[in-house]
Every structure is written in C-alpha cells, then in structure tokens.
Amino acid sequence: MTTTLTKADFQSSQETRWCPGCGDYSILAAVQSFMPELGIPPERIVFVTGIGCAGRFSYYMNTYGVHAIHGRAPAIATGLAAARDDLSVWIVSGDGDALSIGGNHLIHALRRNVPIKILLFNNRIYGLTKGQASPTSELGKITRSTPRGNQDPPVDVVSLAIGAGATFVARTVDRDKQHLPAMLRAAAEHRGTALVEILQNCPVFNDGAFDHVADKQQAAEHRIPLQHGKPVVFGAEGERCVVRAPDGRLALGETATADPASIVVHDARGEDPSVAFALSRLGDIGAGPVPLGIFRSVDAAPWGDGLVAASREAHQGVGTAELDALFRAGDTWNVA
Image (cartoon, rainbow, N blue to C red; front, side, top):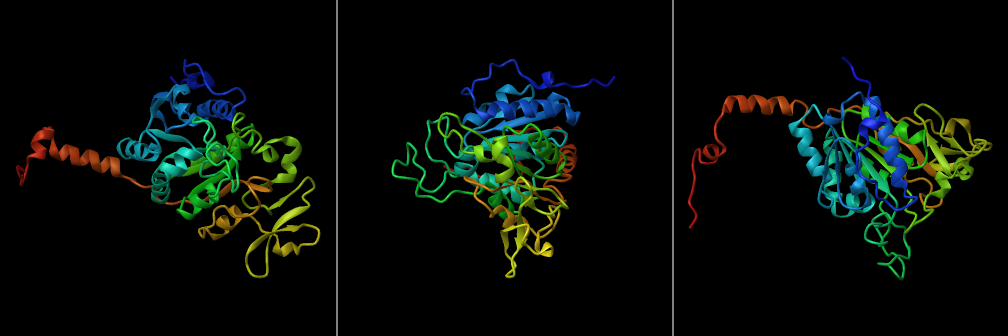
C-alpha cells in the first residue's frame, strides 16, 4: 500500500527556536512542504547541519539528522553518500559555517560532484555568535568584530561554486514562496552536488540585507531572473537586460537601445561554465540588481557512482572476518 506523505510527516516534535522574524522559519516551512513531492519516506532522508543558527535545522525535520561540528557537514554527507546510496542526503549550512572553516570541505564536495544537496543560508553575518562579520559581509561593513569596517572583500557563493566546478548552482530568496520551492525541486532532481544559495534575513544583526530582492515592491527592479532558454531581461517592464559587449564580456544594458542580437539568452545547461560565472559577477548582491535562478545545471557522473555496490562486493569477499584480524593481517610492527 502506498502512503501519501504530507508536510506533517516531516515536522518534528521539537519546539522551533529562532529569533522572531528569522528567515529560517520560511525556509523550514518551504522545505517541509516540498519534501512530500520527493515520494521518499522520512527514514530514508538525512539532513546534515553544521554550526550556527542554520545548524538547528536538523532538529526540526522529522528525518534522520546529524548536527555536525563546525564546517564539517560536507565531509559527513560525503561519507553517508559513499555508504548508503539509498538515502537522500541534504546539507543545511550558513555562510559562516560553509565558507569560513568549512570552505575547504565545501569546495571538494562541489568539485567531486558528490550526490548531495546543499542549502546555503546567506545572511551575510554571524547571527548565533552575536553579529560578527562573516565571509560574505560586504566591504566596510560595521559589525561587532569590525567596528572600523570590514576589510575583507566578500565571497560570492555562486561564483565560488561555479569556479569549483559545481554542476548545479542556483540562488533564491527565503520569503519567495514560489521561487524557493522551484529551486528545491530542481536541486532534488539533479544527480550530483546541487548547491542552492538562499538569501536569508537576520532580523537582529543584519535586518533588511536583502529587502531589495525579497520585497515584492522592489523585486521587479532588483531581480535579474534567469530562465533557461529565455533572454535575460529585467525591470518592471523588461526595460533592462544583460548584453554581450563587443569585447565578449557580459554587461547590463537598456533593452530599448540594445542590439537584440546582443541580448544574452540564458543557457543553464552549457558545458562551458564561463558564461554562468560571468552572470554571477553581474550586479550587486547588496544593492541590486541580483541574478536569481539556476545559473548552471549540467549532467555529469556523480562521485561514487557504483561505490556502494563495489563496497558490498568487497565485504562479501572478506566474509565475516573480525576487524581486529584484518588489522593484524600481513606485516605488522610493534613500536616501542
């Protein structure tokens, strides 16, 4: 008998504890509402989280969950993917967790194309530890750790992921009840590593950082919607666009005066990542316009394809040998 799953099947009994107005609430609701679409029972889904406000996400999902140490969610998720190809493995991480101490692990998960889904919440601040500058905080940002202004240029999540060789990269907004689930759906359908950057509001330490793209009144002006196969135009009346300049670079232009042949038609499935990377460098994530949507989605063999079967075969060959006997097999040395 097939059981129809609902949002309630993915809601844990834990009391949700984030600050009032935190964008994590809307992301959690969107994920719990989306999960039934997968048709995968909760016991075959794992959420791996790191440290930070986003790290609490695994508490609130009625699935298996691992609240890992700082920045190590990709390492643990990779291990799960290597051992259990029957699981749907998801990572939830914040900009501080994923891009500072966890940056190295994130890059290698992306370049390996491990079959995991990464939801990276970006609020451009350390929220749990009271408002220090994070790797995505803007240059000159005044925070508790940078009272004279942040001296470090921010990491662009999408650019980093594309540069690392990610096969699926998307960006969305916490409060968009249509765009966010659409990005989750596309990520879930991808065979390898799928990274979704979610611009998320921290109402206590960085309130309104993304109002220019989250607020409906401002969204048309400040969003550059990326839709595969369609010209990249934006603005309330489509009055602005992305064009290819005579020197080959991408630039923002005016639709009315641009050569129609120069207006870029988005190709998310192009093998060459250079155009997707160029799109990620357009605009200003802190002030707009901001490209949103799927930057890149290409088919490639996921890491570890067949690894689980090979491992099982190897185990069968070994039989029921004891681990201690395996350690002591062959040459051994006693070190005084």
